[in-house]
Length: 449
Image 1: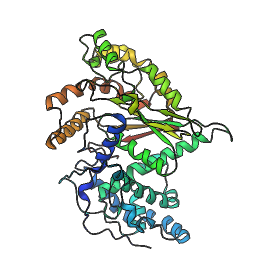
Image 2: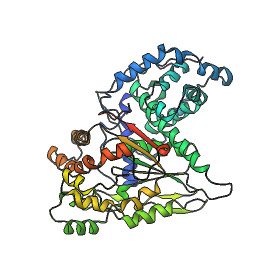
Image 3: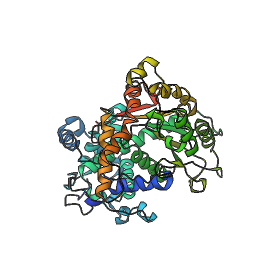
Image 4: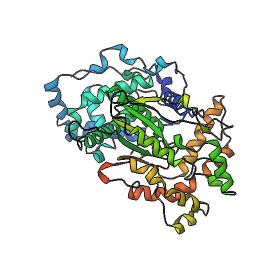
């Protein structure tokens, strides 16, 4: 079996946060969001690292994993080490767009992952926390390990990481999180397309990503979108942010709800243009043929001194059919209205927000046919993550909110989190089906467990 020589220190450790840089640069270009929150988003102090190391050690001593579906696979197909054969594989596609930046973080481990052979890589993959709930067995992984290696190469190019020198946290983020989720999405696409007959127009599958702010959903969607592109799928991305009311609409909402802090700024139910949502999602779902094109709306959060406004349509990105998948993400996607007494017990100001939420199923959720819900332990994590991001921005010399401003900002979302997340986690999003729902639990470091 081929040996992977990745035991020397990495010369590219400082490029780790390019992952976040590129994700946020992508969001800046397409979402016009200048609040770039680079640090602490992807591998913040990697609190899960010791767990991953432990799992990795266990997998190496696990007889069931040593019983060689991997060895059988490679005895037929030969060594799958194509990821090592060309140095050009380490060049970043994203760098070619002129988005290249560099940040460093001394808190990151610099010791590379001790994976010395494809068998070890296979065992490392099998130790991932998401595989069981996705129904991925060691045999299935062994049959598709070439794809896992190829997907890892794509992600390394995108995030400008050298796949020969990935640390355990970096490998875990790719092999335990992004790639398994991508494969789950691929399976959902296959199920979706199988429902149509030959010759029929197949609408793109809309996959909804519901996750609190700061949990890493933007970076996850960014990575998945790139993997779809590299594997020949045409994909599009949308955020619930794209459907905020215009500045004029926001001002009107504020005037109609004096004294309600939850509707003073954009964010909660009521601050979105739902008719615009319906029109956009309906139109993009009809991009089933070559040559069919449309522009996707984007929101400019920097407009009007941060109050925001819909971006100029001339800046909106254009997509062309036939689309295979639409990745639709948002912090409150899938929330469902609750009894009035329940929301009033959380915060009396939620009553009107809850009433507004009744119209959101027809505007958003009914378009979503597969769901990924990222579950956090406590809503307080949102405050901690946002504070980390703003501190990092200030330390980097960029504009950032003060600690008090962060507290005020997050306080406008916490009532909705406290009210709606328990139902989202226990019953799933509004209109979801068990076979089309993936619930991913993450810890304070944004790592699945």
